[in-house]
Structure formats: structure tokens, C-alpha cells
Amino acid sequence: MREQRLHATHAAAMLVALLFAAPLAAQQEGSDAEDEAFLSGETTETQAAAPTTKPEERAAPEAKPVEGQAKERPRDHAVQGFVNVYAGTGWYMVAPYDKNDEDKACSERKPDDSGQLAGDPVCTGRSGVTLDILGGYGVLPGFEVFVMFRQGLESPALARPRGEQIGAGVKIYSPSDGLFKIGFGVAPLFDFSGRKADLGYDFVVHVPIQAQFDFVPWFGAYVQVAPNISFITEFRLDITGGLGVQGRFP
Image 1 (tube, rainbow, N blue to C red):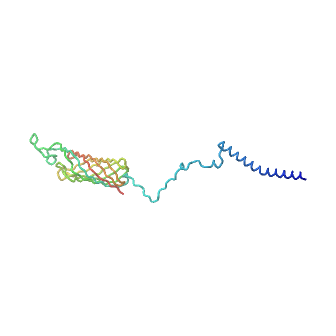
Image 2: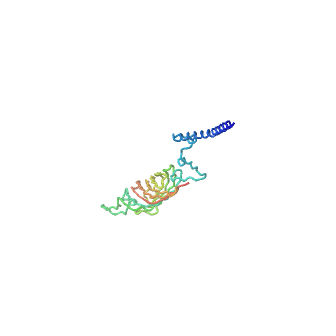
Image 3: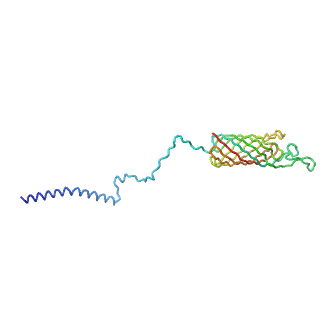
């Protein structure tokens, strides 16, 4: 009887040992498999699905414009009206076609070798101060068309009347939208300043060359040098220089 009890007890102990040993063995096998996968460089499904892009490498979302925010006005001249005011003076040279004509001589007439009164063949002097007023429109970003009126504010050094001229022309700028830009233009002008001095009417080729600085997109100041050539009633070369301002709208 006692031997039967010992056999039963031994069998129960063996059964309990088997029940506890099976899960431990399975757990040990899973751990060994994970270790082998790690050593061999394999990744689990979770690791494979994980993103590899670093946070700083991800593209930043595009900034959306704020509703109602005004765009900065360009500094070019396209589709804008403008007004220029310019004042300057300079130097000129006159060569009259008839130095013996009392009205058209460029200097006081004096007796020549033949005893006849005659003026100098060529005269030079300072140009009188003039005021130029221009108005026009920017057809393209760097291309303007304009009308111009020039009024003399003082008489020239020589015996000539104050300038009065009117005309139209074109002007180009480079770069068209720059803070600092160079302007070049040409304008034929009708000169009617000699109508009161019996000098007749003349035409002037006005070639303005300017360096302009736009303080703000709609307003700038410029320095200008301009040769002016006329040749109908007399040959005349004026080289003037001065300062001007330009306002553009709208």
C-alpha cells in the first residue's frame, strides 16, 4: 500500500513539473529567436513600418498668404501716370548763320577789317535757368511717353530771350524696377522763344540722361544732364544739368 502511495506522489510531481516546464521552454525559444534576428540585422514588422525621415528633414508647410494683406507696390513704371519737375542751367555755344544781321548776331557787332559791323562767328556763355514740367504715362515697366514744357526763368548770358519750348518724347529705364536706375530719352521740342525778338521759330532735339533714386515705389529724385541741339535759325548746342523729382500714380 505504501509503495502505491509513493508511486502516485511521484507521478503527480512529474505532471506538475511538465506543466511548468512547457511555458518556460516556449518563452526561452521566443527570446532566442529575437536575439538571432537582432544579430542578423533583421527588423520586425513594427520597425520596418516606422518612418526613417528625421523631423528636421520633413518639408515645412507652405505659408499661406494672410487675407487682406496688401502686396508691396513695384518700383517700375508700368501702367502709371507721372509728373516730373526739373530745374537746371548749363553752358551753350551759338554759331549764327549771318553774323552781320543785327537781330541774329550772337554778340555786339564791331567793325571788321572791311569796316562793316559784324558780330562774332561763334559765341559761348551760361544758359539761363530753366524749369521743365513733364507729364506722361508708363506704357511698359521701363518705357515712358511724355509731354514737356520748358520755361526760362532768366535770360541767357548772351543777347537771347528766355527759353520757351514745348514737345513730346520717350524715355527708357534700366533696371526698370530698381531702387537706383538710369534713364535715357529723346524729345523733339518746338522752340517759340524767338518770336518776340524776330529770331523766328526753331526745333530742338532734347536728349535727357539721368540717374534716378526712388525713395519709395511711387516717388524718386534724379540728377540729369542733357544736350540740346537746334539748327533752324542758328546752330546752337546747349548742355544743361540740374535736379528733378518724379511722382507716379496711382
